[in-house]
Length: 296
Image 1 (cartoon, rainbow, N blue to C red):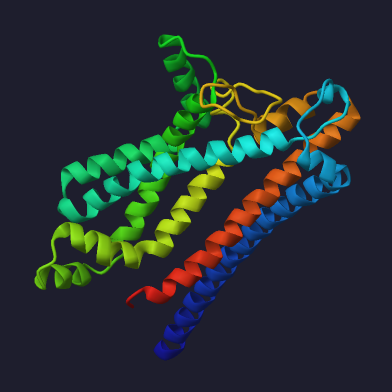
Image 2 (cartoon, rainbow, N blue to C red):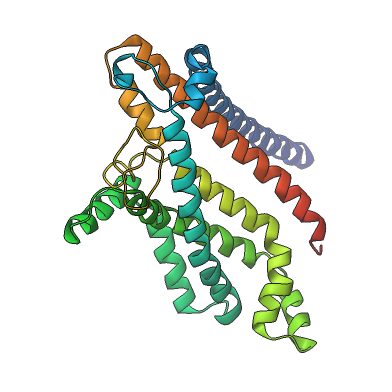
């Protein structure tokens, strides 16, 4: 009788665990379907509404007079402006972020309170909305009596993506085996030599991904540049002149009451989406190529 009761309890426990597992598995599948469905719906909407309005003339011409009320022209100014703005901001952020990540992982102790404080600060900056960075950049411009320009946009976007890049690089460097660092130091290498010849080589796939993720965030952000870059129909020729960006071009075109111009807005969104997808693809290719050099 006792064995029967014990077997019944064990069977009931197994049924409960199986039920719990099935419930959570169902929730995970449901969540995944929501995410994939939302992404598919967004891409389908952009492609269906934007693709018919795409033309070679639109991609290779700057806006002509009355472009935003349906006249001739294109979005070349916004494409070039976005690439220049995001590229320069990413380069500036990289120059600042990489030394910070190396310092946190090579020159500070693993459980250092100072390192913990820096990481916490970057986590806070990571979560600050982009519009706040734009407002900060605008306040600085007003204080120094500066006008909206490419330089102001570069500095604002750099501030926005530095926390993203620095924390991503930091996490990548933390994953490198400690024994590899010890072995490098043991054979007489300095910390700088260890960083440049050993650590960076091992972390190259992750660093490349961090750079491209930051670039993708910079090129697609509208809120941070709304007050700082201004807008112009011309191609960027100076750091101190306003510059057009794709996010703002999309915003201005979709805000008009003209259906033709709204279609151009979706076409601009299509171009921006393709650029982001291309960046993601390049990130995958480079990461897989650089992974061959990693010591496992």
